Image (cartoon, rainbow, N blue to C red; front, side, top):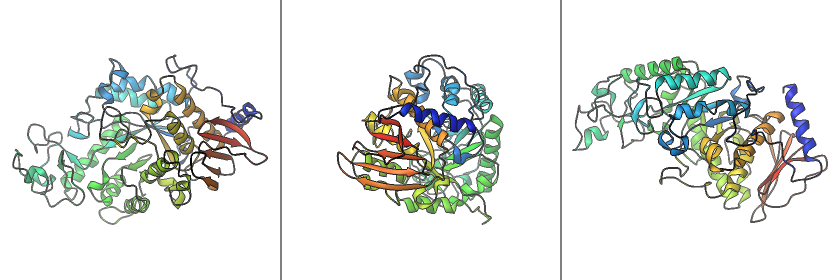
Length: 448
């Protein structure tokens, strides 16, 4: 831990005095609308993803949301980089950058980096500013499917043959389809009805996607987030990861079954030739749903052993989160809406994520817009500062002290014996030697 960490943590303890309602200083520089004061590169930047806090920088239809004004989304986000660096955010997940439909999850011209989010030049400027702050750009890789340029199946930039599309895709089976008929083998994973499912057995597809990764690196990306990985076997994630260097790689294996997520992570450690490579990390959907049961259903027992990747020894592979562009009800109706009804639930959720193992990812909409007073952003900043100062990492150890269910319930755990955390509305008295650092209606954090 850097010396500044110890000094800052001591200052947090001093603000607590003897009151459980004490809070850390406001790190928001007086409000979200004031110009940021540039504090320089984060003192915690260390090029180790296990120490990181990440941000998903976008939400559904963020490219044309009136909240970003008349500028492009890339310009909107570039204007936030100093604030995010001040808050010790280490990496930002950006939306799909290739030209395509809407948000980019139906990519059309993979090698054209002018999209509805902004121009290629604006994207390079954003990534350059991030790099100057030692922040990492995470590219969204939509590798399961593509859409045609003028027909269902005519791929351009790059152009691929009929063998690039699996034969059981709608481009072959739907009588309304027009264009070249797919002629690849059957899909090896789940199908996606809105676009043409790719044949990853094809050398043409594999080579094209590896080329794509190199082009993304040339733009300034150094990290990967794989979309809809249930659509193709995990060995292809291993193959693509092995083809390039990267800082962090994450898969969206959307499943609440912890063992299924673990199984997918393990499978990414092999390539198509059965060579070994580093296993990917994954979003901890299991924890997301257990937090819902604890915070909203008030069943705090759900946060005992076996509820998260970290709890089964996979903290270094766990990306923890509350909501994202798919699950949050922002500009869309097909979402699970678990946390968006209560600001207190959101705050308590981040209090858990930002004090516990795994690599936490803050959702940009929560950070920028959920609380127009700026209170949630300031609170998240405080929680990040507490995490960084205490040296909590993806592999920190958790000792669950007690859980109580019900409307006056709570979960209490010690993290690395450095922080004592209560999540839940109930009253709990910390043992002697612990002093409150931060307290809100849904949580309290103590330090020694």
